[in-house]
Amino acid sequence: MEVKFPEILNDLVGNYEWINCEFIGNHLIEVQFRQNPDFRYQNSVAIPVWDKKINKDIPGYRFVEDNDYKRIGFYVN
Image 1 (cartoon, rainbow, N blue to C red):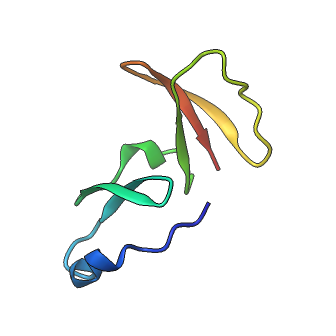
Image 2: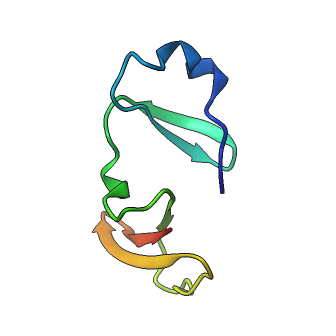
Image 3: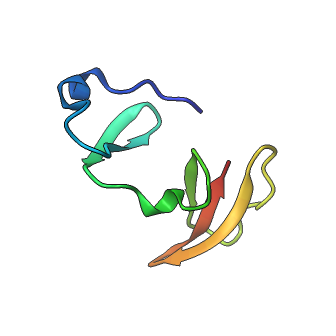
């Protein structure tokens, strides 16, 4: 899923090396001025997986195990 860069942050472009935006759906929920370690898998999308019962086979994505608190991994692409 591609999300348009939030207009509210346009004044920040060019002032920081990294602008890490986190979304739920199309809603911006968090902004950090650092690189996001969840993208260390050469991925552009990181969908967290919390439940071991979830099917780990989604077309176009691969599952990577990455335990953190109750998260078991990510679907990445």
